[in-house]
Structures are given as structure tokens and as C-alpha cells.
Image 1 (cartoon, rainbow, N blue to C red):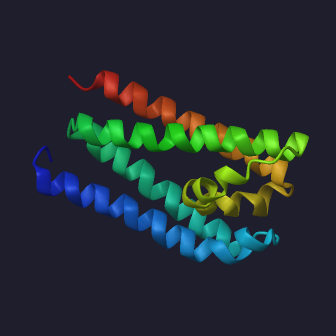
Image 2 (cartoon, rainbow, N blue to C red; image 1 turned 45 degrees about the vertical axis):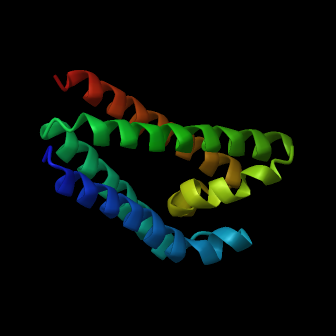
Length: 143
């Protein structure tokens, strides 16, 4: 797993998951429509792919990819905290829209269970925090 080809495959897999998840969730996400069961399934598959990638990289002691995953989920965490602030206070952060589309769109299916945008943002922040901490712990365990 430490070879470059395997690392490239992992990165391509995660980028593909981001793109496919974004495309599938974008119609409801962009319109602010209620999330559908399809959105929830996309979100579950998206999270599953990331969890599998993190576990494989940890098992194979690939620190570089674990750092990549950690950075990705840290950015997701920051953006989800920003969306909590925006939804709670109605401040405007138009500059963040492209980043929110790129990092949070795939998680829109959570709204199917959470209902409101504020609750959805809080749950996404929590999930991002858990995954981020998991990557940090995984990185520390790799010798």
C-alpha cells in the first residue's frame, strides 16, 4: 500500500466519491428542498467509502493518505461549523458557497433524518469532528 500507485488509487477513489456524491445530491441541496431517501443513501455510501479508506490506510500504515483524509475532514468540520453559525444567526458567508458545495453537499442526506438545516449542520459538524479525530488518532498509531 505504500507504493505511489496504490496511494493514487485511494486519492482517485475519494475524489470520485466527492464528485459522484455532489452530483447526486446537488439538485435538492441547491434548491434547499427536503432531502430524499436517495440523498440519505448517497450520504451513507459516501461516509462508508471514507471510513473504508481511512481504515485501509491505517492498516497499511500509509501516513500520507491519513494526513490527506485528516485535512479533508478538518476542512469539512470548519465549513460545517460555519454553516451552523450561518443558520443560527443568519449572517452571510457568500464566499464559502463553493467550498460548502464541494465539502458538504454529499452529506445533505442527513437532512432526511434531521429536518432543519440547523440540526443538519450540527450533525454534520459532529460527524466531521468524529472522523477528524479518528484520522488524527490513526496517524498517531502509525509508526
